Image: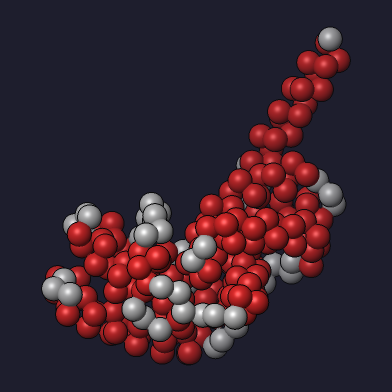
Length: 203
């Protein structure tokens, strides 16, 4: 029994130590086959990755399946991470590729907007600066009216708080293109909000 207690205590200390490490260090451990490190990384990022994928595929079941695929890829390829970006940026790059591939396989890009608006969204977003309920619903509806490219930019910068440089890495476009898309996305969103009667935010 003392040996079991000692082993359990050692395992607990190992988990605590892993939780205190950086994402990059976790990836190094994952590359060495450390399952505890994989569990910690998954717990840190699975919700964000799920929400990111859901905004692309707009289907909860598909999003859940793709999250599993993303982290399976992480387990298999952790050793290939070169530290040129944040781990979270790398994860979203993998997630984006998986999501777009799934969309191509489904052979359609435009999904009924009414279905999209029914997806619950409880994450912190620009909506938190607006009046709750009605105004939040208006903002979500306006975002959904943006082109896929502009909606993706808004999603990454506001919902996932990524920098222009990180967005460029995730999408695979120059920073100048990110800035251009962001300019037009914000302008279009402001016009849509103004048309919906939300002048305060549109301004």
